[in-house]
Image (spheres, rainbow, N blue to C red):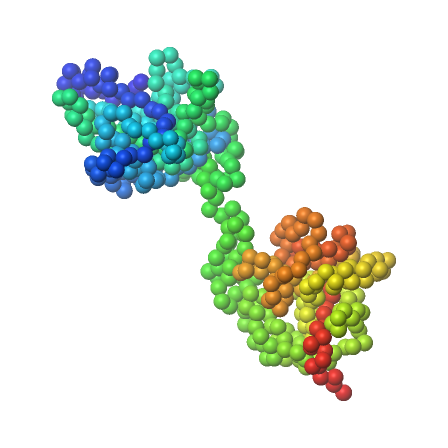
Length: 442
């Protein structure tokens, strides 16, 4: 194994140096309380940063290239374990079967001969004796430091260093702990430490990002910083698990790009949609228009509520505004009874249930249900939580970021989440309690 030239030291140290070259292994270990009490100071932040940076740099330089090599992060708990292990100065460490697997690289050198960075570089230099194709180390050579250092699934690192007295010699113990550990064997043979392939081509879903350093072309799998490939404007916060923006007060839209400046004259303001919910008898975008109930246009009466089926198609939000101008809301289906009656009625319209535009046909209908990013759930236009549900099999699936809900003809008018910009027919609803209080007008 390559090592620094010991010529500045007395020649008598060379036999000892050869005898004390360390080994690497993976085992279970947690330091005992009495060992922790004798542990000297840990590495400084600068030393920790240099060792972590060096590990990641070396891991992204392996040849052949690694397809699944993970980027490492520093672990203070591992560093404490490594420091405790270094303080043992090469004596055997206790083993506790109930603790997680930790991999170890350990080495003793004459004090002051090499730095920790040089030791790690020497571990990596063992690659010259290792054949990735054969998954074997050269005869009578040591490669286990190298294979642990480049073990693809090891994602956390902690290191420790200690000045020791071995006999009459002053020695330094260098220890690094890796989690999860590596150097696993099958039938007495260590398996390959990483999978060969284009950088980051076999990252798992959990670490699907690809970290690339500026000074070389290798890559390391890492937790993606922005898996949604989108950003929120106007200081909005991106929820990376749902890929939705949580907007600050005064802004709305998918990217918080729309500034809300709506004043509701006779209604209440809904900030998350930047729109008004009008009081009974008023409609329009700002609830400023007095409306009269259009009794003659009821297509269905269910438990006193009036349902009007449009003969035109429009986007979800334009359909919502058109219902509101009439003094109603997009239909809220809150029971199986209402769902069954509407599905039966719309099914009877099948032969004429098409709206033709120059380039569009639809047989589906908007209802007043949308996905609310601030709530991470579907809500009715009035803000109420969806209690009853009748989504079709496999829905909602959020294909194309479908945040609005339609009655889908091909699914027997069960529900489907759809892009809000889709043009559908729609159903307006006028509640019985509203109708009874309506100003009939002249």
